[in-house]
Image 1 (spheres, rainbow, N blue to C red):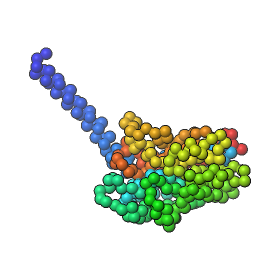
Image 2: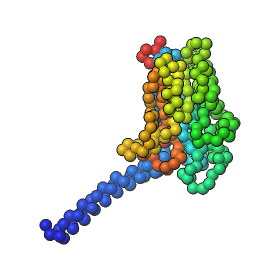
Image 3: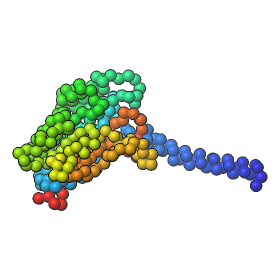
Image 4: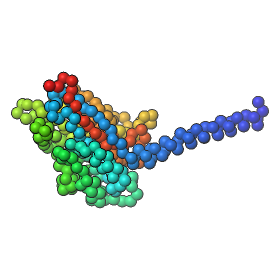
Length: 278
């Protein structure tokens, strides 16, 4: 083969490679930087609980986590629209409500971000209330601001709800296990914590905690095949001892302004009676 023929072959191969790269790479970039971060999806997850009362079968819980709101925008408006379509019985929030960290151009104070976040919170509505715990990104003043916006903050507290004639306990960790057990009788118990690793502290044989809801890791923000963050509980449903754990992928971002194969998430948890339930 002559030198010009070899050059033409090499050029043709490079041209084909560039075309393939553009055909694959451009849609991925559009998806990662524009679509997945800004268009939240409803992720529906059934959680089967032993001895769940019949009256609580089908209870709809919306979980939001890692909102990292700087400016109330289209993503937040889309998330609210999705939640209104669900008409949840409960809304549970698992922390990190504000954050700047360079995602949005400008220097935003915590107070400004809190104002934007509480604007979002005032639009939340659920039949049996909205409950939340703080995350590692949240300053102390987030708690009174959230309470004023209609969110009941339950860090280190527990609340016993009466729903359809049954008791449902919602607690925020770190909470003593004793607050989760009432007079030796086990009621359906949901714990909220920003960190999914908390499940290792509350789960053991015959634990009173049926379900723990958490977030923090954003699902890595970049999923397979480019997974970056390695963690024990990155996203989704897990069974740890007698406790089930669901880890939300987050609504917002606080570091890399990209999501790939890890969309912004509004979680719909549906409680179901396990086959062994009475």
